[in-house]
Image: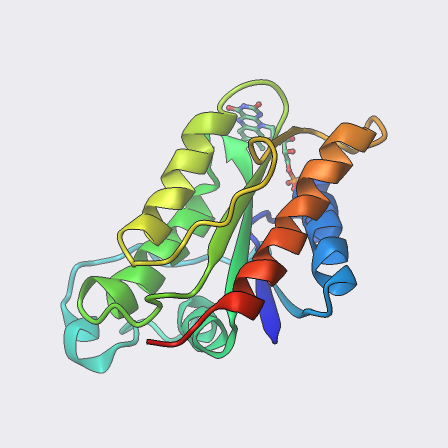
Length: 188
Ligand SMILES: Cc1cc2nc3c(=O)[nH]c(=O)nc-3n(C[C@H](O)[C@H](O)[C@H](O)COP(=O)(O)O)c2cc1C
């Protein structure tokens, strides 16, 4: 089984990716493989509401990561989405991609139904809860079970200070819980 980790930060080795790496450790411990996609720094389109995806099940724009993400999510057994907090919400580039990913596949066709998902966000000061809520909405209107841990998935920047044992435990537990859910999941 394999979980797709989407780093929604332009920084491949930043705070968000560091937090996601700890979730990955929990998955590894439980025998689950991972695949990463970093959204990076390239320009992405916003949704233009053209309706192409209603029949194509893919976005009309094929020159950014959107359709690659769709195929990778379909292939994965579960997904973890990480984002930095930007003005108390998720990174706009990540949202532009996810709007198109989920509109193409889930709004019309519920193609990710039953696939467990979780969000992890990193911040400097405030906006963690609003950012988590923004990301959870993609999952909650797509019949994707949201995996929980033993505290909220919003973390203070971890570049300037060591990740505390407490935070490490929350992140690792998310990976372990995702693995447990995957192993007990019954296809219907
Ligand atoms: C454009 C921009 C807006 C930001 N807005 C917030 C914010 O509203 N609240 C906050 O706590 N941190 C904010 N930050 C800080 C980032 O969320 C934080 O440094 C994050 O951990 C960066 O993750 P990364 O290293 O994975 O890119 C902002 C950073 C940028 C670049």
